[in-house]
Length: 66
View 1: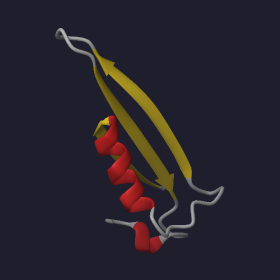
View 2: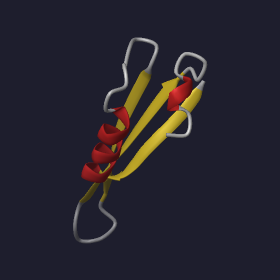
View 3: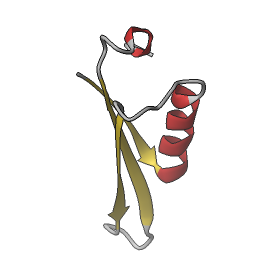
View 4: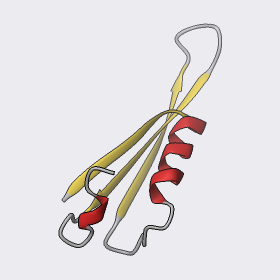
């Protein structure tokens, strides 16, 4: 199993994930988990996003390192 993570401000993580996922068959053997992160350490609210993708590199060898 391989694990890829896309993280940052919500729009950065979303754009990076969408760019990576374009044209890939995201079937039932691919697990995608997302988690919103809210940072309120200063006077403004900063919303981040973590998208983690788990896949079998033997089923999807072309995805490794992309």
